[in-house]
Amino acid sequence: MSELTFLILRFGFLALLWIFIIAIVYAMRSDLFGAPVRKIKAGGETGVAVGVVETPAFIAPSGGAEIFDSALPGAGSAASARKLMITSGAANGTEIILDEDILTIGRSPDSTLSIVDEYTSTHHAKLERQADGWVLTDLDSTNGTRVNGQKVVGSMPLAIFVPVTIGKTTFELRP
Image 1 (spheres, rainbow, N blue to C red):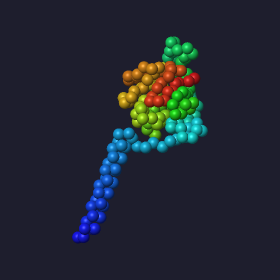
Image 2: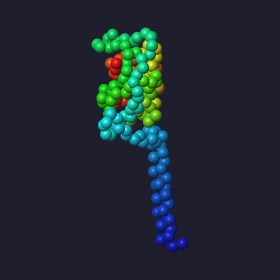
Image 3: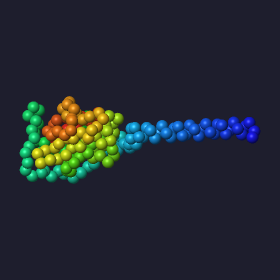
């Protein structure tokens, strides 16, 4: 074999080795940080990083006790919450109508509220309607969920107008 052929084979092998290394790094990145998430338009804004599933109007549950947070001015019944309003973050001002009994929150595109944020877990939290109002459950997220500045451990009832922070996004229940 000539020296030129041997040199070309060595460079070809080196290029193939680098292609394998890049493929391994890309696979590890996908495993650690999740698959790349596409940006979805929400509320008519271009490039908003939160996907919102628009749904029909809310149907109020019949009967049941009400949860009040009397420490907050203007706070009312969580059972009367009809929408979720994003108050800060990439999709500030976006509303989600609460017509389903369970709302999932996370980075996954399958979530009802998909938050594209490095501080949000794939399946971060869930908001569930119960007879006496809404209950927020942290799904063992890495960076946690905060309600009115306090970290949520497990589940807790949620009153309207109380800020919930997940990553860089803050939202609250509204009547």
